[in-house]
Image 1 (cartoon, rainbow, N blue to C red):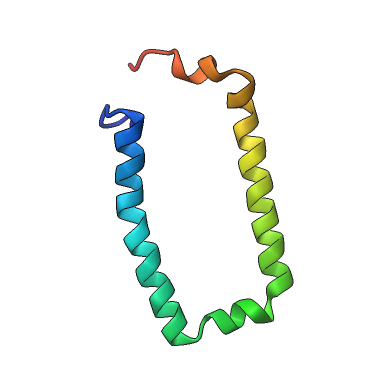
Image 2 (cartoon, helix red, strand yellow; image 1 turned 60 degrees about the vertical axis):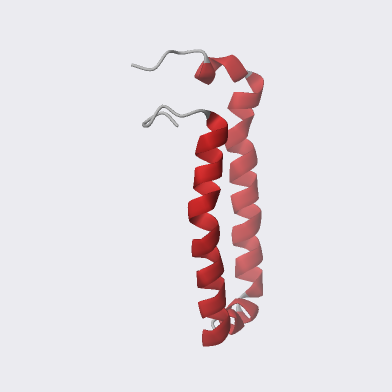
Length: 77
């Protein structure tokens, strides 16, 4: 968004356009490979990582929720 100066909707759509096929191919390969068995063997660790990821996303988003204009009102250099 900042680098190419496109609006937020276009940037979000392009991001999904790139990442969704990548994730689908990876999911298909891991399913065929049997790699998800390792995830089941380390379920506690995987759940801990997921919980920490969610907590980090929430804590990282709080500053922008408290001051939404702090980051968006500055003009680009």
